[in-house]
Image (cartoon, rainbow, N blue to C red; front, side, top):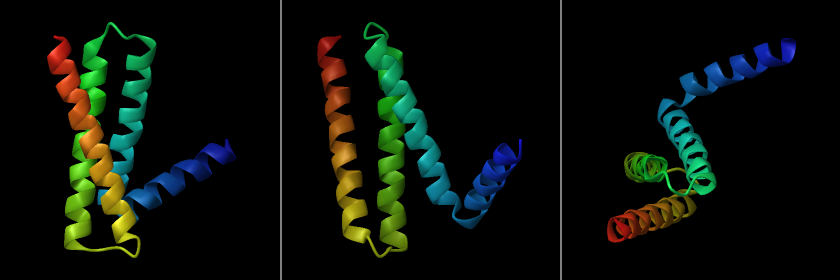
Length: 99
């Protein structure tokens, strides 16, 4: 029980210290979960669309945050966010073509 309490306190502290980065983390974790479900159940397109939407939202949030307040790893963060954004937009295009 002490482990879970420590984990919960760390989560609360992280959310208070840097809320935008915490929201991006939650969005990316949900995207991973939705895309994993979409991989297991390929016939269900809503999971794929929801996962890609989370990736687009998190990528745009990262790009805006880096434009407002650059971090030391600014180039890596921007490159990763742009790559995730292009891949998710390609995924959306693929879904639209297959419908």
